[in-house]
Image (cartoon, rainbow, N blue to C red):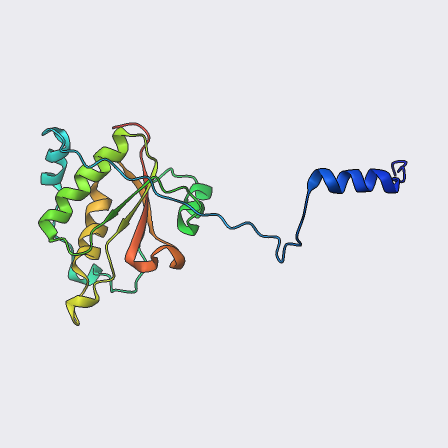
Length: 183
């Protein structure tokens, strides 16, 4: 053990005056808050990204439909397990958010393509898309949630996605990991 020198009362008082008033902390955990950066919503010129929207298939097998409370998960081959774990637990910093509440399928599809392209251009790696749980579809499968699940699997810039943690939207939102370079 190191040889410890006892502090004098004068040194202790000097330290307390230099530090100032203190208060005891009731817990030892830091609270982290993540603020999503807004994505500029300026109109983009017609490019190959709009062609991506036209290649999305709206067909999905009714047997593969997800319910309102089902969690979503998808990954392309070759993604590191640690990165997927961070995505699923909500530990990756969310760079931007898109809220699809109240959008029609056609508008949501176009917004998704524009949003992902804008995030890619701004080098944003992880995004959140809020699709809602689809409770207003009264006894039917949630429309936007099922379409988004299908579209994200087809998008070439999407490496993985997972339903958000409960405190960040749960099964009503997905965290998406994007490709760093285009194609």
